[in-house]
Structures are given as C-alpha cells and as structure tokens.
Image 1 (tube, rainbow, N blue to C red):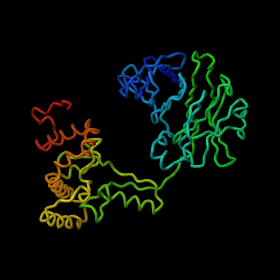
Image 2 (cartoon, rainbow, N blue to C red; image 1 turned 180 degrees about the horizontal axis):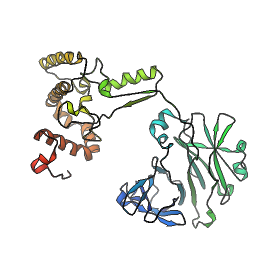
Image 3 (cartoon, rainbow, N blue to C red; image 1 turned 90 degrees about the horizontal axis):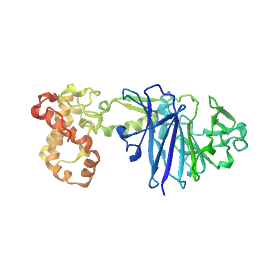
Image 4 (tube, rainbow, N blue to C red; image 1 turned 45 degrees about the vertical axis):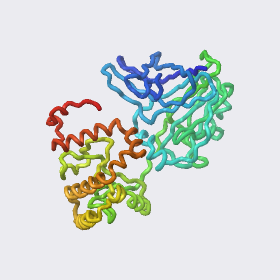
Length: 407
C-alpha cells in the first residue's frame, strides 16, 4: 500500500523566491539540489506532497532559492522521517534560521559537551509533537503546556514532560481525541525541580485537522524551542598538530600525538581541543607548503602527520639503521625543519611502498577505502602525480593535462 507524505512549512518569501525540499529519496532529489522538489505557495505556507510505494526511512531539509538561483539553506542537521503504521503523514515544519543557537545542533555539543540523558523508545501516534532544544544541561527537561486539560491548562506544575527522541529532540504523542483542532500550546524548560522558563513568542497552534481528507493518518508538528539559553563556557587549548612533537614522532607533531595531548587536557580539566587545519598543502614540495590554510584538498590529510612506525616496518636492516640515526638527529633540533622532515618521511614511505605496496593495493581494506572515496581520491591522486611530474602545481603548464576532465 502506498504511503502519502505531505509537507508544510511557514516562510514569507519575496517575489522570485521559492522554497525547495531536498531529501535522500528519489522523490526529493536523492540529495541533488538540481533534482529537489519545488514547493507550492499559499498564504504564507509552502506545501508539497509525495507518495512512497513502500514504507522507507529518509532524511530531508529545506532551502530557499531566489530568482538568481542563489541557495540559502536552513540551519541545523537534516530532518529524519521514520514511517510507522499509518498510511498518510502530515508534516508541519518550522524554518530554522541561523542564529547563536545553531552551533549547539552539532555532534560536538549534542554528543559530548552538552550530552543529555538516555534516549527513550519512539513510536508514532495520531499526533506527534516534537521540539528541538540543544543548549541544555544534562538534568534540564522540556515540558509542553496548553489550553486544555490534557496539556495542563497553562499550569506549569501540570505540564507534560516530553521524552528524548534523539540528542536534542524532544517529543510526545497524543490521540486526536485528546487535542482538539487549533489547540494552543507552548514549551517550557524546567531546570531542577521548581524553576520553569517559558519560551518566548506567541502561542503555537495545532492545525484544523478535521479539514484533512485522509483517514488513517498521523500529524507531525516539528518545532524549535523559542528560547535562548545561557551559553556554556569551556576551557580548552588551540594548537597546531605540528607543534605536538614527542619522543614517538619524527621531527614534527603527528596525528598519534593528539592522544596523549587529549589525556593531558582531561587531566587539567579542559574540555576542548582546537587544531589548525590538517589537510594536505603540498604545492611546492618545500617549507612554503607549511602554511596550514593552503589546502589542496578538503578530504586528503597531510602526509607529514603520518606516524611511520604505525604505517609499517621496513625489513631492510641497513636502511633502518641509517633511518633511526636520522630520526635522532631531526628530533634533537630545537625547531621544525620542514624540508628535512618531508624528505625523511617520503624516503621511508616510498621504501615501504616498494616493499608492501602491491599487497596493500590488493587488500580488501584498501579496495573498500578506494571504492568509498574514489570521488575525491582519483582527482587528488591525479593532481599529486602531475604536480610532481611537471614540478609545479600550475596546471596550465601540464601540456595536454592542463584542461580538467573528470575521471
């Protein structure tokens, strides 16, 4: 049996602006902006409807597109849809603008710095009301109150405690008989046992669901709490990875040096570690590439941060004796010698590739990595090869390869 999903979002656009919905299913463009669904406008509300031949989960989000095809996405993470037992679903969403609460809708805060209590099991009912509220303490609770007995008649002491659907997303379900059409409600933040903070703004309203044509349906009202909570303060350290030199590294701080440094932060009561960009910056193959903000790829990590011992052991004893002597010398330097580190590490990595490269290329792990990342890995490898072949990153000097042709 087909499943019908209706979307509605309130947004007052200007002439030439349109709201689109994009998602992970073909009906919503399969994640491609050019294939997204343009919604229909009526009295301040944008609407769209799709049909699914089978019940399937997906994620979606909204964006604004103006007459010049400029894109303005909404803030926050994608919205999940997980079907239940109903034939039709009516989703009433609110546009999420970028504001000072937006950073808290990130894994760094939701899963670590502002982690909330355990998630409760989730099931649909005839009415589902959700509320996103990310910047909360572990013991904070979101309540819902309204203008009927089920919602406590605006008495905060009788307001209903909502449940956690996912980090930062609270919910409650109701039968239609419990909440009349156009019922009013608001969200409350309870801190401790007896301190209540009502959200700002006018009262929220349920739609007049008696006007809906479907029979076996679920109303889903997705909201964001209209409340700016006090911003938490955290102690931390900002440091470039190359500065974390240790006795286990090779002349420069490496990725593995982050582990003991993170332990140090924990022991000293710090909760945040900010590092400078760690993507590959190789253009000239010399110290001029040390500027961390000149990345040649947003995916590839810098090879100089590799720990050579973890990369593999070279079986040539004579080579290793010379190499270990060079490591002692480079680690004894007071400052990083970028060119010397690069020369030393690449000598080791190339020797290791000659020894184990063919075996690695045939391995299941490498082929899985290659298949999962080929969209950026192949162009990056081609760029790196041609840069070294022609001795310059200026692609206009690459003769017949100077014109980009996607692999």
